[in-house]
Each structure stands twice: as structure tokens, then as C-alpha cells.
Length: 168
Image (tube, rainbow, N blue to C red; front, top):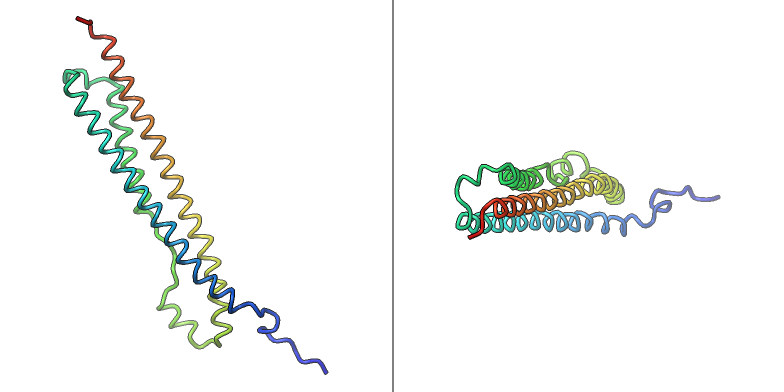
């Protein structure tokens, strides 16, 4: 007579899958931290370059020229860059395994059942965490586009001012 097939026999790779599932949290955590770092660095770069340009412009351009729509648009776009960065960093974080939930719901399971359940939840968390990281990436791209537009507005503003000024 044939033995009934157990879950362990149907799914023999649960131990291997469990190790990979747990490592996926570390991988996504590092990816998220890299995106946070790049957002911080880009905000610092945008601020430094914007302030450097403004300091240089203040030496070349009279104060009344700062009422130009090109300058105002550039300034608004700078604040858009900063706001996007703040939003990207403050949006919801990664989903991790809750020790409280482990304690309350999973510690009575067999080792095999525990690992199987953690693989299931890690797969769900991986999907949501990947989307979260992708949204941070998209925010970084939006920050870059806003920064380029800001820079172009400030350059157009300066060129238009220089064209309007009679040369001596």
C-alpha cells in the first residue's frame, strides 16, 4: 500500500525557499536605502547648485529683474524638487515581518508550516515593497525633470535679462 503524500513530500524545497524569502527582505531594504540616499544627495545637489546660481545672479542682475516670470517659475520648480523629495522619503515604508504577529499567530505551527507561511507572506510583502521602491524611483525621476526645468527657467531668465540690457 502506498503511503499518503505529506506536505513535506509535495513541497520538499520549503527550507531552501525560506532562506531565500528571508533574504529578500534584506535585499529590498538595501534597495530602499539606496533610493533614500540618492534622494537626499539629489536634494542637496539641487539646493547647492540653485543657491550658487542665485548668488552669482545677484552679483550680475539688479533686484528688480527678479520679478520675471522665468525667475518665479524657476523658484517654484526648485520647491517642487524639494517637495517631491520630502514626499518620496516620507511616504509609507517597507513592510517587514512583525515579531508580534509571529508570536501571536505562527509559533504554534510546525517548523515546516511556519516556514511555508513565511514564504507566502514574504512573497506578498516583496510585491508591495517592490512597488514602494519603484514609486521612490519614479519620484527621483520627477525630481530630476523638475530640476532640469528649473535650471532651464533660470538660464532663460538670465539670457532674456542680458538681451534686454544695453551693452556698454
